[in-house]
Length: 271
Image (cartoon, rainbow, N blue to C red):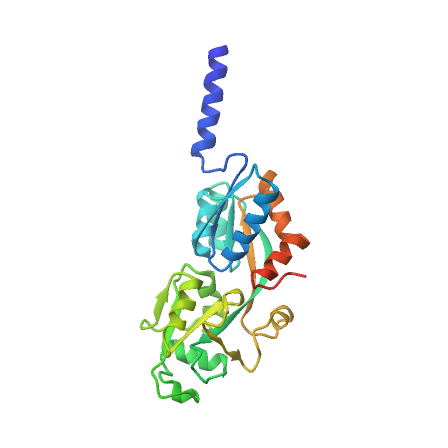
């Protein structure tokens, strides 16, 4: 009987190791590179207050984070878009029941090289640029220079929101340069005088120049009140109602201290 108890305990331990669920004191976070700065800063503050908890964070895009929820290989999926119905069905089929937590508000801001004199673009002009209908900055009041459109990969939540709110489901031209992260997007635009790209508000700095959209500036206020036309919520998803350290971490991000970290990371707090 004693031997049977030992075997069952060992089997339970092995199941915990190989089932993809984090062990006690370990939180696994995966997904959106847009949400990454918030998650990293919040994790540092949380681990400082809870030295017995280790939080490992990786990027790779919203789609990859949600896929990890479906596969059971993450505790939290960062996502810059809402989960799709097909993803919910796939998760439920695998025994996961995704729960969304909005953690911040964001504005996806078009950016150009700092030397570019263009200050404002309409949604229609942005769509035409990315479809390849407008190819030179002189058509938009800028210099006689070919436009180099930079876009995100299709696993990106930022790409999907851009596709929905700017492209209106029109296809982005195959000549557009594809980058895998928000940081890479900012670097690509900063290094090319003819480039245009789009990044979350938390990634805007002096290396690029933000342009207004339809005459509206991409500020925190305009993102919250919905007047900026390319605004969205940022999410963290869990594969079921969170418990233990995961619940504590989510509650921390939603607390006043956590929302201050959101603001310090360059994004828009919920309140």
